[in-house]
Length: 188
Image (cartoon, rainbow, N blue to C red):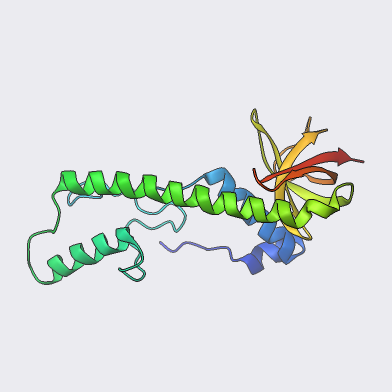
């Protein structure tokens, strides 16, 4: 069975612009949430890779840059040489959990640096209005992404009724570069 894969170009045609396709893609990724490292053992069901819709999957970059890739390389090397696996099943489960936690920690730091840089960029633009798209809506708040300049912040006033994908006009009302906060108020 073959599967059709939608490209950004396909979505662009359907939504009328590459920007709309990119915004939709970002919203979908945020709704999916982050992934995690998992151990798949022989003769057991494979979870596969949801985003790629494949059952057999691994990834690899330079082993000296990413510990999960080093683990993968060691396992592949042992398998290709007909040697026992470099790790026990329990060690692999523990390493997968550790790598997931470390990746989430690194992502938090990257996100905080991006948020602080965006807030600093917008520091002198308080009171200006921007067009944006809602990228998240929950009990914790409503989040919006503007595209010029690209930045994401919280809708602190007028967020009632907004949902992911809604386009809205907002005014920048507050920034705090040290904390990485960007706050918007909804405008008509």
